[in-house]
Length: 300
Image (cartoon, rainbow, N blue to C red; front, side, top):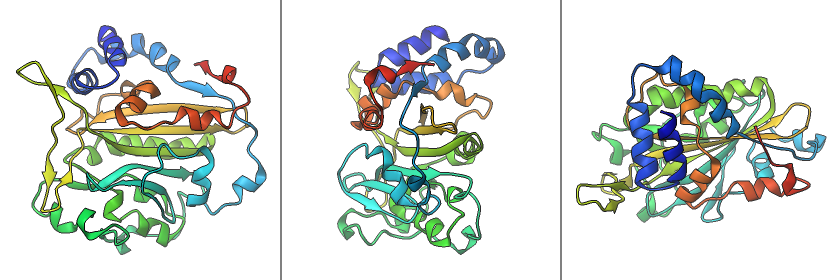
């Protein structure tokens, strides 16, 4: 397994990442032994990036409000849309978001909102040629999975309602019920230990090597609007330490297929450069704008 991890992190995009992540998650048995060997190496890949002390004025924004999300900038600047509870960049070609950023805190996770009052809806801010509809999912066998999770924004009914725009939805058959849900729960639990938790979530469309030895990017599309089904998903988590000493950065990649719930989430950690190269997005430069020097980056 250690040999796989080195290969997966070296092949930053393409068949190496796609096939290796999938192969990793199909492994059964030997987990306890491998976990003990791998844990130190995995943790060393989590960056600790000191930033200036958080100012009180930055904590007075509405819980989970989109204004606070802008603190670390955006991974890209195309088709930015601001909602009550998150900020997103929409990809008109795939009919889904390129990324969604939200801020979590204990205050954003509690409140009077109830998802029973929410319904999935078209995003009328997107041109009719480029938007997904509920009809695209009907009979497809795919879930309408949230990128910014509804449970992250109980602080406001409007904030929770906004997570049900189809522009905040990605298509997955099983992840939302199992490992993906566990990762969302992990992000929420981190609010107990960190001042603020910033979460950026998005799809990946990774190539795989096929029988002819060539690499191809292949993904299914749904409905008459050809809504793209990602091959993988990423989640980048920025954690502000309580004492203001700095920020911890964690990044995960999951394949868009059934995942064994017994696989530890730590197995899904990848270097942030992996996601930046595969997605065309940038995270580290934005975070570094909040630091005093490049020497502040250290391996954990």
